[in-house]
Image (cartoon, rainbow, N blue to C red):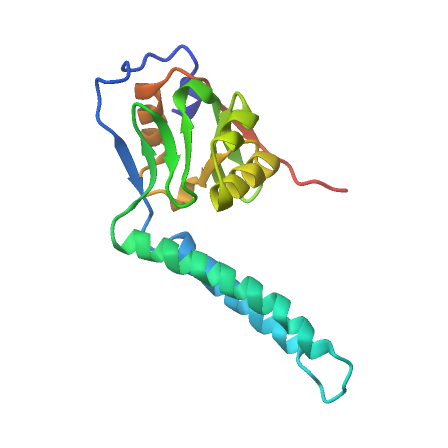
Length: 194
């Protein structure tokens, strides 16, 4: 079904449909992410903990502790939003909003929607901007940093893993085409060997 959608697929003009809210799949990423961070924190701390020598290595444990606190806060926030039924993504007449990062990309600035499938089968939905600078200029603080990192890492300021969404990917793409006629492209990434 994904391959059948193209830039020529008809869509409902804006204003003819209310917003589409896409929630978190219950317990999806937040608990896995939290468990992984706890495991990494425990391993890093076990390797770094002061072994009785006064070589100052115990202070290095501050870095994994700070990373742990950051990711714990993100995981708790994601879980809280999921438990309260808050959306992860919203598609409306204005554009697409990734609520967890507080980033909105107007439809006029969406060049394409990419579906990238990694070798492990993980699919990521990426909303690619026509003008990255315009997106970054409209944002401040953590939202700007998230968008900047997303553009550098995956090619777009708004992205989500398909398995974290409460809506099937095909329905999400159909909803995208109700608001805009941008192309939807799929590709498979191969591991880098360098």
